[in-house]
Length: 449
Image 1 (cartoon, rainbow, N blue to C red):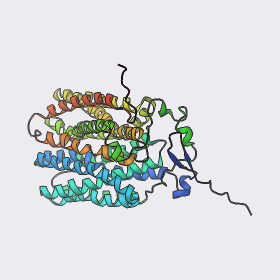
Image 2: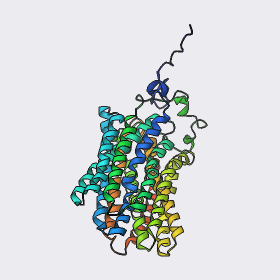
Image 3: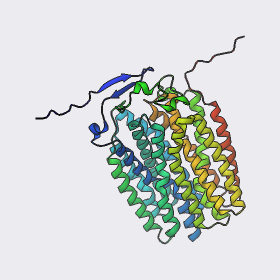
């Protein structure tokens, strides 16, 4: 009788900075499958909720073109959706940590809340009910799904965090593309109820099923094929060490929020989110105002969403090689230039250039989310990275009010291009702000007198 091979012993090791790692367990022993499946399930769940943000502008434009309607009120519904989506991220991270809330419970609950958005829009024209169903319930649900999926992927890929978190957050843009095409092709006031009911049902079923299969690894888990002690110091093994910093110590959320680095990250997130959301929502409206067709508007938003999604993973990989702060600076500069290009191509009636600048804006506008998430871990440490990023991510709620709500006040006039010019300028200002990012915990050294 052959002896069965015993599993590798589980040991706890510490690196030179005192961080502990749980080593010795492979994913197959823990969950019965590769960790790639956890990435896939999280990607599917995130892809299915992307329509709530990226498809809204095209759906609204299609309904307005075919049947008219109040754009300003509808845009404020989305602005408030962003407020609740971003506002739910930090509490989700805190509750998951404090009560050990599993992703297999959190994501299905979030799926039910997300589905309330399209179902409400399908069944009522009442503004207050739309705010309750779409903005509040669906926004909270999207925040729960977003925070849970990104945290789960980050835990399974501690050595590839930037690229994998970028990949799973990028699913939001990629998953919205089929819905964008659907809205641009067939959506009218007459079939609105049927279309949005179908969207809500698909979202509920797919997100809940994918979320029910998600599992977290044990606290501090590390893949057994890499020595975490070598990973922490060896620049040939961990190439991100050459151009990125490591935390001086581990910061809790209450400690992180008191640092200058947190304040700078928060301001950058407000500005970057406002400029990015402006582009996502108002590109189709700007296209129609400037005389382009609905088809061209949908193509521009579709390209924006695809590049936004795929670009996040690319940005994560580049930041490992070039440095996160440097990559963030470049992304914000590109976003500012792309928004200036959108105004130029729209005023000059250049449809191909307009679609190209929309894609370029999407590339830059999605990159800063995984970059800031990685900077949070680099500056404040990994044990509380999900909660610390949730606190920074809450800045997106102000970005939603500024980037979606304020332009809604001028959408009926001819001043929408001015909003893009302002966004271009503040994106460049945010790029300058990145120079103020410094790792917390370093002693302040004064010049000799």
